[in-house]
Image 1: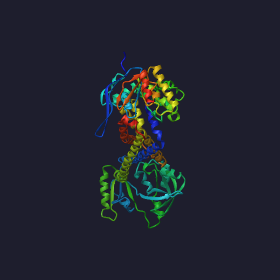
Image 2: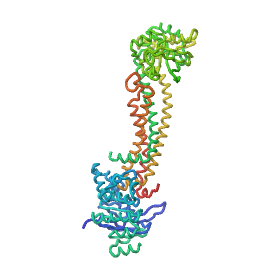
Image 3: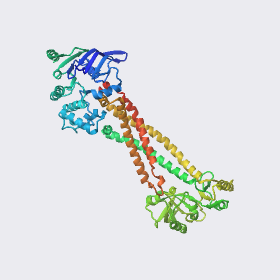
Image 4: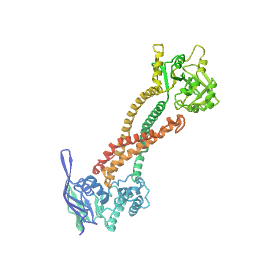
Amino acid sequence: MTDPVVEMSRVSKSYRRGDRELPVLKEISLRIEQGEFLALMGPSGSGKSTLLNLMAGFDRPTSGRLVVAGRELTRATAAELARWRAGHVGFVFQLYNLLPVLTARENVELPLLLTGLSRAQRRRRAETALALVALGDRLDHYPHQLSGGQEQRVAIARALVSDPPLLLADEPTGDLDAESAAEVLSLLDDLHRELGKTIVIVTHDPVAAARARRVARLEKGVLSPPVQGEHRDEVLSAAL
Amino acid sequence: MKFFPLLFKNLLRRRRRAALTASSVAVCVFILVALVTVTTYMKNIIRETESRLIVITRGRYSFLDPLPYAYRTKIEQVPGVVATNAVTLIIGTAGDKDEVVNGMALVPETYLDTGPQKEEIPPEQFDAFVRDRSAILVGPVMARRFGWKIGDTVTIRGSRYPVELRARLVGYLTAEILSDYFAIHRAYLEEALGPGREPGVHFFPLKVESREAIPRVIGQIDALFANSAAETKSEPQRDFMTSLASLARNIRDVVLAMGLVIVLAIVLVVTNSMAISVRERTREMAVLKALGFTDGRVLSLVLGEAVLLAVSGGVLGGVLAYAVFASAGVDLGSGPAGHFAVQPLALADGLALSLLIGLAAGSFPALHASRLKIVEALRWVG
């Protein structure tokens, strides 16, 4: 049996607001195996994005143990986390967060600037990633020249380009119309099924969550164990 | 190098702001380059005078207090004095637009021995000057300014001496310091002024037989005129030039002080511009970090942007200074007025200043960007 991509053991996260300690995640334990597609659901403020941010190494837990892609993140320094992120995690934001001054190809090339690849190799890789998300004909388009769905696909290409073992997406369809959302979800589905990518998405949308094989629900910082099959369908129906 | 396109594109996203910020640095660098150029010029002149055996005798309190021409005969009799001249400074106007011109009336025969710098006037030109009382020599810059050439009759309208001097141009002065000056016969000025209006002498340049004789000659000349109505002060040419330069130095110090204030203001302008730019891109900074850019990398990107912006301004300022000095009629590179060119060292100083401005102005915004927390910065709404 291979090592899990994410292993969380009694992870808590709290923020300090003045003198007050504000708990956001409470003793969460979670195991995500390689090739899994997990959806995290829950109401606003339940801690979904915070959990995703911890998996991405954007932030560190207040307590507990968190291992992602074989790396213990709890005690890593900021610089260690940054270097780790570059090679081990791809992140898709709700609002795409492309750099407006760069073309689609240049945006996708950004993470590769941190590698030792030559300019030609970087360009080739970026073009391959854009072709994978069916935007091979939009290489030199700037974000403002693309539709929302296309922008999000560029963002997915950027998240994939360094071939990280874990792909995280925070409300990837939250800012899209139904048609574009369906395209993006199909893309994530394909990446999971055809390339065996490990994907975790945070979503409010039961339709989006339905693409995932397992669904876990967060309520006030407490995570219910992920469910699949019929139980998953029950969770999704309840959310509708 | 691979980050350069990113720096460049970020810099150009607000073109007007970038252009204005770079222009402010350009002004700053222009001032510095101009200051260094003028200072270097003065230093070169002073260095050159060190090797010459010239003493300047002038009014005790100021060289602007004229001395009687009759002093010349007495000075000539001082042992050790080889040659003397008598220089009267003339300020006037010339040309269709009444442009201000500076010049001097002097004794032509001894000019080559007593001039402020080594002259290399072609012998035929100098002979023509000596022979013709109404002849004039002009510096190359002045000649170019008015489009004068040998054979032309030029007119100078005196202001301190209200006379119109019509003179025939017979040659060009080659001393760098006189590149924008003219020289006429003292006798011609006397004649133009008419009887009873003898022009005073602003200074007597003298050639002394040896370096050792200089202190003695100086002492004897000043003793000759002590307690007279017009006492003298004699000094080696180097000291005379230095005192002239110190006048310029005082002006330079004031300009330098103002320049420092300007530099400080420019640093604040660029800092503000970079701070706004970073603030506008808070989310983008967070995205870069999310992609794996370390705090140090983000810091160097912002700092690089500030340096690129400031150095662009520095290059612009340097080019501007070069162009202004060139168009002001001063020869660049070699040639008679070569020393008054924008030297490579001055340009290097200007670029170094712009680099420092970039580093100083970029450090605060860069530090701010590097310290951004990804999670908080991603929530930032501009």
